[in-house]
Amino acid sequence: MPSYTAPTKDIQFVLHDVLNISSSDVPGYSDLEPEFTEAILDAAGQLASEVLAPLNFVGDREGCRLENGVVYTPTGFKGAFEQMKEGGWPGLDMPEEFGGQGMPYVIGTAVGELFSSANQSFTMYQGLTHGAASAILVHGTEEQKAKYLPKMVSCEWTGTMNLTEPHCGTDLGLMRTKAEPQEDGSYKISGQKIFISAGDHDMSENVIHLVLAKIPGGPDGIKGVSLFIVPKLIVDENGNPGARNGVSVGSLEEKMGIHGNSTCVMNYDEATGWLLGTEHKGMRAMFTMMNEARLGVAMQGMAQASAAYQNAVIYAKDRLQGRAVTGAAAPEKPADPLIVHPDIRRNLMEQKSFVEGARAFMLWGAQLIDQSHRADDAAAEGIISLMTPVLKGFLTDKGFEMAVNAQQVFGGHGYIEEWGMSQFARDARITQIYEGANGVQALDLVGRKLSSDGGKHVMAFFEMVKSFCKENGDGDMAEFTEPLKVASKDLQSAGLYFMQNGMKNPNAALSGSYDFMHLFGYVCLGLMWGRMAKASFAALANGTDDVEFHESKLTTARFYMARQLPMTRTLLARIESGADPVMALDAENF
Image (cartoon, rainbow, N blue to C red; front, side):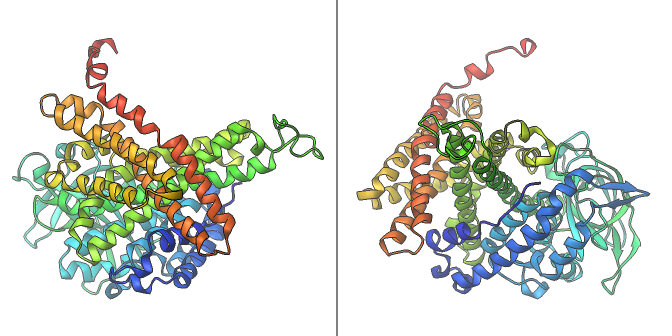
């Protein structure tokens, strides 16, 4: 069974050496001294490694079960959820007025990585609740916030998001779920939703569903969608759950992975619901939850890669197989460990350079959210809006790829379930699909985000990279900034191609959108590795006690610049080939 050790040292490095959070003027950041964040991460890491990680295999094997209308989670999940609630972890970055601890989002993200790496299926229960609570916090009335948030923040009650229906996924304008207005101001919700993660379970006394539905007589399509709060148990005037609402679990989906999370078919039969936000503006309210969820899914992709990488390294150092081509590395043993072989090293370096770069990218994104929300920074809001599809699409695509790479290190044992490597790959696979499939993320990036506000946000990113390269173009840093400049120019060239060709032939832009999302991702990780290299050079110059850690950072940064970042040139060539290679074949000839 796989093991998990929280990478608290690496997270601390990103938070304090790279992002310098404690010296930031973002409200709340001045409290984030290294000793304080270390204590939080150590406590979260202990819970992750000692409680959640051992249940990951259990959840995968047992799954959830539906009996007489009740969903039961795997053995041990309920007890672990109680420990999670007792520690106050679900409300770590939620407002204190509703029982949270009021910490910045960046700390919630760092802790979320540890929990997701240890047990993605389990962590989804509280993660979805966090998203639902955030939507109510932003769009709910004062009465709704007072009624639902305290118990959702504590996870006494959990939450869900209900979008997809059997006949429609991304195209939510096709939904059929109806919301009939009632004289008392409530609505009767009727319809069926599918793929509802954490739709029901035995770990909380109530489930607060956020349900998209159409009010009869509203506008056609997506403009006629509204969002409703539909509790499993109706909450009475004293704030206590009472009568059962008209919502039930039709079945549990049988899935490729995340077996420990209850993915439900939900039936709404004139269930009582209350409007959240404004009539016919449901997507605006839901996107508060979806955008948070997309960043959470980006984190899940890198978290599965991180856990898989840890176990691949252990195996590569322990498994004896063959001899080093340059001569026996361990002559006292019958064979050398796998890690002496160049192709194993290549595989592990690809994983390491992705995981550590992606972690920095993710935490930088979380810092931008804090700047936007806590400091009302419009520029940060623009950058993170631009980056959201890149974070979600690139980190989950590469996260799955790296989980497969880790499985490959194990050879045949990687294909055997008892080793657990298959689960990392299977659990990572869904991250490329849910919360907006990655093809949709690429279309959003190219079709909407690039041109947002006249393109000023992408231009601000280009200027950010240019300034970093200019300020750090001399001496030891040149070996990192020179490749970054080349990659950034490839990204700008791709954007220019879309500007020149996209209007007259939209297919030319959209055919290259997926490649552009990846090209953008490679550049973002290149910027992160440049920043990390700078931080490590500074630490070494200042006489750090941990020379090995920072030398390893620099070695990994060099690998990324030499072996990964040049992928931008290939992706640019694919983009500039235009729409013809993609669209030329007649549909009947596929």
